[in-house]
Length: 250
Image (cartoon, rainbow, N blue to C red; front, side):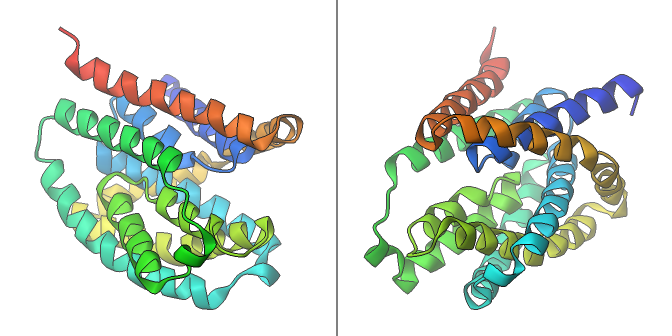
């Protein structure tokens, strides 16, 4: 990669870290489509985002290790990895398609995820049902494998649990810390060890993510969380519309 490409990639990762830190969600949702818009291939973008997410998750897990509901985290990880394997098989088919079609599909998936988070508001008594948990964990793995954006189903499920915010974040950090290393290994098996160059790049560029996270914290503290999340949803819709529009333009 050229210096300007590294700076552009680092800026995207920094912005995604800012959004994640401020709004409490959305790292992969912001980073993946923007990296595709810059010309990166989907497996490369997913590897880069997964590596940075893993670094962020391990950092968060260290701070909240006493709060992690490990039984739920291990259960979610096991089911999520099953969905992940299926999703990676689908991704292997997707990469054979024209890049514009891949970008269009990612834009459509992103729109669907945003609307899902607007519409789905599971109540606590429903969210504790094993069937809802299984669907959420499997969907998370599928989306993570196909496009690297598997966080939303986990967030929706965990937010509906009778947990405080620290335990919710600890659960997410626990699941990501356990499942993302496996995802990197499966990506290398599926697409070759060359994919690990982008994992190395993700480690080198993690300071950009950390910088964005530090910038996002005061923003999140100043603006009410519901308003901030609405702003984030609007930005995500703009990003997804840009992904779709760049393909459909005459």
